[in-house]
Image 1: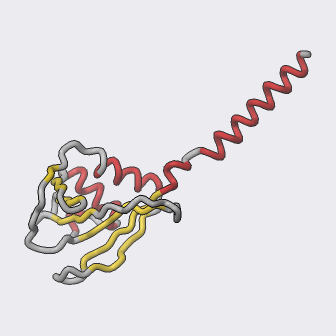
Image 2 (image 1 turned 30 degrees about the horizontal axis):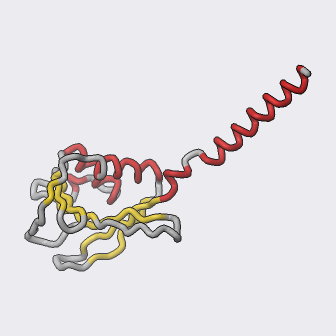
Image 3 (image 1 turned 180 degrees about the horizontal axis):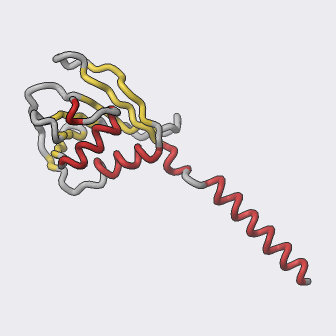
Amino acid sequence: MKLFIKTLFVSLAMILFVITGCSNGKEDEGEYIEVQKRIGDENKYEDFKEITDNKQVQKVKDIILNRDDWKNAKVDMVRPADYKFAFQSKNPKSSEKAVLYEIWISPNKDKLEVVRGVDQYVRLNVENSTDLFEILTGEKLSDF
C-alpha cells in the first residue's frame, strides 16, 4: 500500500511538472509589435522593425497600456508622426483589431508624445520615453 501511494504521488508530481512546463509563458507568446518609421517629411511610412521578444513586448505594454493619464482629445500635430506601431497577434485566427499608436519626438528630444487610435493622447515622462524609444527603434532618444 505504501508503494502504491508513493508511486501515485510521484506520478502526480511528474504530471504537474509536465503541465506547468508546457503552459509556461504561453499567454505572453501571443503578440509582437510592428514598428513603422516615417520616410522624409511626408506622411509615408516603411516597415522598420518587428519586436518579438516577450520581455520587450511586455515592457512596451507596461509603459503604454497601464496608464491612467491618457487624455480623450483629438490632437492636430504640425507634422506626421515620427513612428507608428501596433501590437499584432501571432494567432492567425485572432479577430482582435490592432490599435495604431503614433509617436512624435519632442523638439528637445527628451520626451515622446503618443496618440492611440484617433482620440487619445499622452505625453510620456523622460524615463518612459527613453525606454520606449530604445525598445521600438534600438537607438537612444537623445541621438535622434
